[in-house]
Image 1 (cartoon, rainbow, N blue to C red):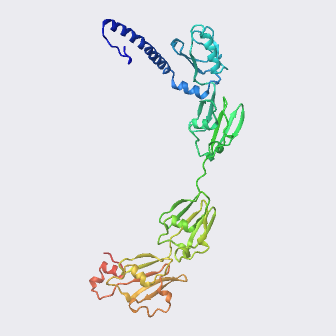
Image 2 (image 1 turned 90 degrees about the horizontal axis):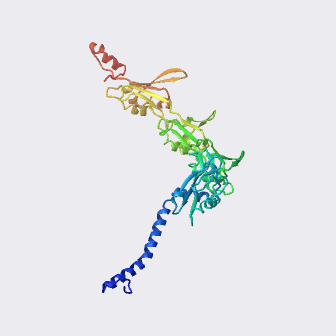
Image 3 (image 1 turned 180 degrees about the vertical axis):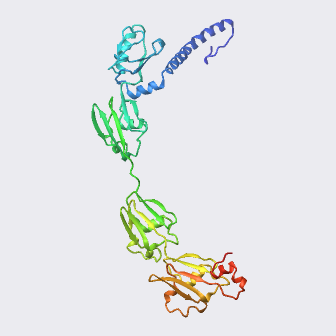
Amino acid sequence: MNSSGFCIFSSRRNVSSCCRNCIKFISPLIGVLLVICFVGNNCSAYPQEVKDLTTAVGNDYTIGVDDVITVKSVGQSEIDDSVTVLSDGTIHITGITDDIKAEGLTLAQLKVLIHKGLDRLYNNLELSVAIKESHSRMVTVIGTKLSGQFPLRKGMRVSILIALGGGLAAKTQLVSGNLLRDFKNIKLDIMKIAGQTPDSDADLLLKTGDTLVLNSAEEAPLPVYSVLGAVFKPGNFPLPIDGSSVSIAHAIADSGGTLERASLTGVTIQRGNSKILLNLYPLLIEGKPDTDSKFELKNGDVVFIPEITSKYLVLGQVLKPGIFLIPESKQISIFEALATAGGSSSDAELHKASLTRVVGGKQVNIAIDYTSKLTKVSDSSTLMMQNGDMLYIPIRRRKSTIAESLSPLFLLGTLGLRPF
């Protein structure tokens, strides 16, 4: 073998000598590899969940009835076992004749007792004792998303128990809590425990048997107001959560604005049992803010925009007879009324039109001559349509035969009706 560790064969004697030297050189390495493999295989035998729970509760965990204890030994698989603490507080370990009183001991203390009982059977015994399942040190939470019982872990506080329970079932400000401990009721401030700025003093450390009871109040509905009637988008609209005010003009804008047939002089606000009347015509039509335009809405207010009720009727020899609205923003003259109805037909008798109006409870017929530009009308108000007015345009008269006079179509025409 040269300085690099490789054999140089020059004879059979050299071969034999070199092989013996190689065995001396490799044997320690094989031993190290075997130890690494052995230790690695045994270490992987410890369940991760057992390690995690033991780490969580700590070696000072006090064992109780129904707890499940895991005992393991490196290189002595016959010792490996999981035992449950019986109702009398004892456990039985293979290799130890007498049962061991485990209840009330910590994991560290139990490990000492088990090691003492097995040490006479094994040399250099490497032993581990861990908690696999904790059933004696439990805490309970009621009122979270996932209410239930959970093992008490080392340093566990109320906030951790809430998290284990899936979190609060409602907004933090709506939740109240109490901790039941040793038949005493401890009131908790959940805002200081689970709020945006938690207070460690309020977040109490838990003890075995603690029960956390959370109560969620019903969330108050958000403040809203309603806009109904002659608007483009009637419905409910939220008021600002910060308590800032909303003006009536803002409310009208939220609802998409008023329709053409809206009556702005008769707007009503229903507030509880009271009804408030507003005139929004100066604000929305004339652009002149007044006292009513500064009206501010409150939670539950209902704004109602009524429709215009002032209407007039146009019949006879017009292209589009019907009922038409008189808007609040302007007056409608008899000329505009005729134009709104599509204008007169070719056989209309414009100089013999008539306007029927109720004056003082009595029906009055006013002759209208569209051809003379109303030179005979003395009262200018006659030129403007009023609520309930009926404008009639008759058909032009012409000589007819006896047969035509008796015709149903002729009779209908005399009444100003056009069947086709």
